[in-house]
Length: 196
Image (cartoon, rainbow, N blue to C red; front, side, top):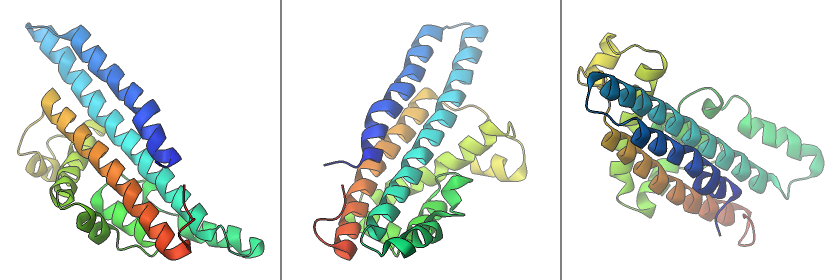
């Protein structure tokens, strides 16, 4: 059974992202104006994808903290939950591999070791996720020329729809596997009946 976070990703987030596909189809054109409009949609689509994936990861982390502390004395429970969630990187930063590893590490997980052991393809997916963040930052800050972004993006300033779709597929596969790995960890720590 999926977590509430994964249900939200598969339902509400999917609908929001599908609307970007609809907008892209509506704006297709062969002239310069059509191509420029679709590039704006591609960029918006990528930023929206990153924000929805960040929301999923942050929500999954909160759910995990809740389940891990569920059987703790009520007096200490809120203190422990705050210790696990306050100041996490996903509250302010992108859902990059480093931020995910740091935040889920606060729960005692060896997050990426667990995720890549769960499914070997997640090694490649982790690398693809790491390539999404520079695009998100360059678009959100409208800075494609700084030394950092120019190198990370290979000097490119435009992202293609098929690339955004590939990032979306990566995020969807990772969301499913994150959900399974976090649930397995919760059950290993808190007991076989813990979790969603």
